[in-house]
Length: 327
Image 1 (cartoon, rainbow, N blue to C red):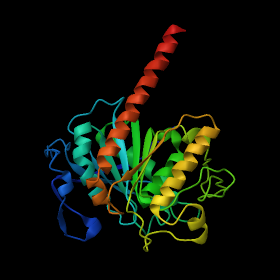
Image 2: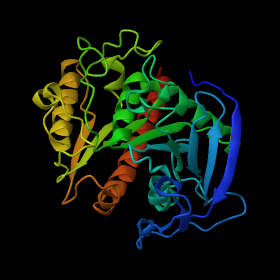
Image 3: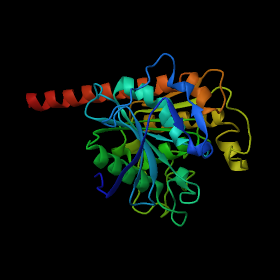
Image 4: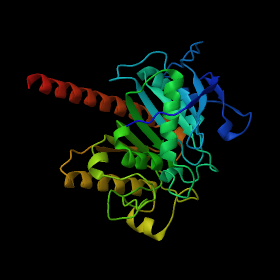
């Protein structure tokens, strides 16, 4: 059941082609070339469509977010929203700016939360008990806020996360599979194993860390999932979580760990008789740079994947309706 929350509305409006990036320094302006020559930059319109807008939710820590509404909806099975989650660089505005032309072309809305380090120190792990506000509930409040401000009830919800955002997204999927129609995890530093015997966040045994949450593999393993990572994302710098256990079990690099997790997810699905829903893609000749990953095809893969997942959902829905008609 999707929760209803108060909304502070959308605080300001930003045109897409050139925008200030507060994540990287007050007053600094970046020309985001990743609006891409092959895509058409959205036109600024008085209605607020074709613009990046900023807002915040009133509850769950007052999560700030950036949002984008395309000028016209695409051929989705209901109004579609893609939630995009940053890593520790907290480049939420850059991500939504990079994705805006793709969102415009496909007719999907974007929501990019910004988890500040002080308020949400544990957002990658959803905000465990005693470690700040629950990041998963904050996301839900932000979606409700954007929905109220835009007057759109989003029937299709897709999630994407890069780096630390990939950690958040795969754990959000595990905690709230009913809220996710498809998920894309890119370049996550490490992963929660689909094993109920292992304590969270290493595994699924929550044990009070996330009150009210039960991580059920039979539910989340059915959601379409794609994992991506740069083939050169093998540097062990300060941003990579390092521990003897993690290195031994999941591997030493983000590539190793992504491949390990995809294998575990596929094995867990097969063990339960579920069809394989987890894809894997190595982005060629790039490391851990988000911008480089976009240039290597990350956004193309992302939007193709969620479009395919939506069409599959539409076929299933039509099949169910036909079955009901026959009975």
